[in-house]
Length: 390
Image (cartoon, rainbow, N blue to C red):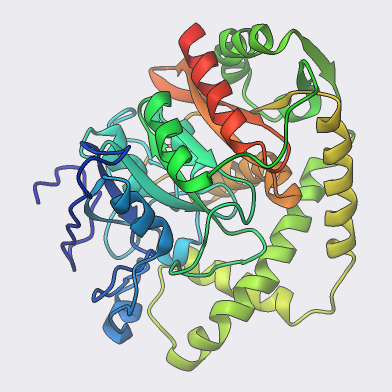
């Protein structure tokens, strides 16, 4: 395959023809290399894992559903090691090219999927989103990106990272394509939207750069016009502490899933990922705190907020894409600020869609809309209507 963007995996070439005449006929897609394809192996971004991997017995149900709906799979895309980063710079295989912001990261961990779509190599692509791995690359690459309600799309046949946060998400350049994919993967909505208005939390927007907030203003106005107005409000949370709550819960789950394999095989890991697993291990070995209860309390709070409004707006990421080979200190700052935004929907298990909303210094920025659990199809239609206004 011709791949000038380093978006696709080199160890395997997978092509699955789409069924004729389905609702996605004529569209090509790629899937992050943590999705099983029958008879093929997953690399999960790490060569030692690839060396020990066995061919999958079955294809992930999400991939199979898309192929049955007529979409043709054209390849598997590069991921950060074990989907455990927001950066998109794989130590072993390199960084996919962000064609929307050359010289800058595509964002992770679904970096190859985002790069392939942004660069026109695929019409849409599957990724996973545990802490922001679809929403963030969508923002940095100027794409539409969907993280569904937790549990809404089957996660079988996909590498587990932190199961109570893991979701199957997808990217597209066009809101209509994003919605068509959602119609196949999501089925019918499980709730009816009754609230009106767009909630705009000032404490969440305060995390974004001034230039990003200014660039998001037209998209915010378009979303408010669609929803009958906007209401300024405050989440009333220490978002840094909420981010740490997410990281601790995620770390315990990650170590439970991957820690035994890491300790048994001692794989070669890139420095950033090795440090992340060390952190996960340290959290897993410490006594549990009240993070689980805090998550449930916050979930109930978000349910109340969205019970009286149509949607909540957030910056998809607080900055434009960092430059390639940025300093570790700056990348940590980017990660912590970004996770302080993405953990809101992640902890509360809510659907979130990122919409291309403008540019800062020539680089894309995204506006996110968050809806109640189960209102995923409604949210995708809202994204389409907002994009049409823009």
